[in-house]
Length: 447
Image 1 (cartoon, rainbow, N blue to C red):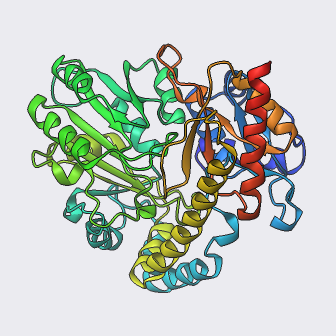
Image 2: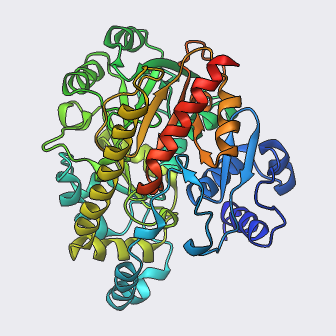
């Protein structure tokens, strides 16, 4: 068992046995790293996984806290809690029986081949299946350029430490952006530069200035359903980014982790607009099926394949999981389940938008127009104290995530907001949750 897996299992066991009790604060990242004799990035990754599993939650500038006892059934969950914080898929719609069938089928089909270390590229049959699967998202690539990965985070870490062609050494990231990756970059002292992204989009002139500087190794972006904003870059912006990458020989790491929740017909990612092989496309399967499956895919340009292959060294994903996913996709179950998830999330987003329209008549918060995905930004008045707001909402059993943690620590031009996620919000509670948020913001203005 890898050290990371052993640490994660130990943390889960401590939570399950109530050594870490519900509501109690976990050891700080540094303390946990010292306790387990491991790197800070390993603890950050473990805490991120526990957050995905809805076992803990984070409060920026404060730490990580236990949510509930692992192993409890849905029936024992706090039915009064309104969860606008969790980013994990709704456990009530996980395809347990379907995927169990696929696991059994995979074992019957592949037998002894599943219990070896495997290829760094991933299971050959799955990679060929992914050729057509990715093509449905306008990502056209041969199997030789597709790597099966243990989710997205390990890929980002590998790319961050890998040598790239050109003289650039800094990674350009959106602000706000993916918090787990930002903390990793900072913990490893990897040169990183932030560029503002708002609900209105990204400043292409500022982006070009960064690209033309010669300092950028690659630009990391979530063009679709960005975390934490929830917004999508326009087709013109995606096309312009692809053209700038070619013009200045800068690589793009396109994190399309929400691809499976896309409802736009013929949506073209940056990858589709770039003809010069400057885009590394990555996607996750965790937003549709089990996060614990830990599977993703990366499409590499030809000139980076050998470097990536050398850096990854060996296959670190379960061949059984890969084989089961291959069966799940090929028998049509994946597509059917995807449409079920999209329908449920669209309904929750609709209810959220209606509630905002109902209670935000005074325009206290700015909310972008979003009709799909799982995230949405509530931009707050400057007078509101974020920490007090999240604490007061928690007392009312409304859990939200402060926007503060989605910025680099030294990034100055920040918007004040909370991130709302609907992936585990119960439809019947959304209206009450939004009402509570508006009421507390009104109260916060008077503080």
